[in-house]
Length: 207
Image (cartoon, rainbow, N blue to C red; front, side, top):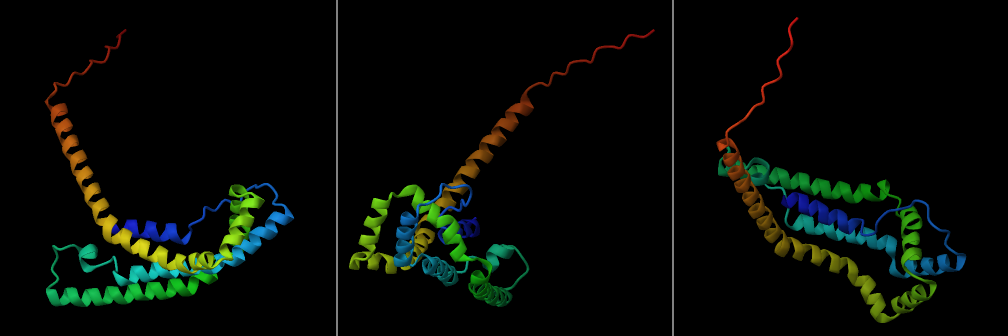
């Protein structure tokens, strides 16, 4: 369950904007120019790499896959074998991180993604006047600090979520599952106590 939540978090951060490059209204040249300036100011293409890298860094600090999660506690491994198995898992997790960082730029054309997805989103949610306001803000020292801080903010938010929220969410999920299993078992017992009535099929006429 923790592994599932972490994958969801990493995926949500990596692709923080929804992709819908379907039929969109044509963006005016002037508005496109403002959006381009805004994207350049916010370093949107680099931000995606930085946020992804930060998410992977959080993943590396506390690897989610352990011998316990892979094999459980009830197996024939002795303590020394568990240590060796964990070392092997750590190596593979580091290999995953390295390969992911290397292959991501080769797999995804972020420039095309920004052109086909981010431009329409800015066009949909902001007017030209609002976009100009954003450009003005991001040119200020505070705006530049926001841009530079976002990857670290995202990484620490992810770390805090995993540290604080994941255990609570996991506990809640486990509690609810236990309640549902208990209620199901009770309903099953009641059902089995009820007398079963069967209708006899109609007799066929014989010639």
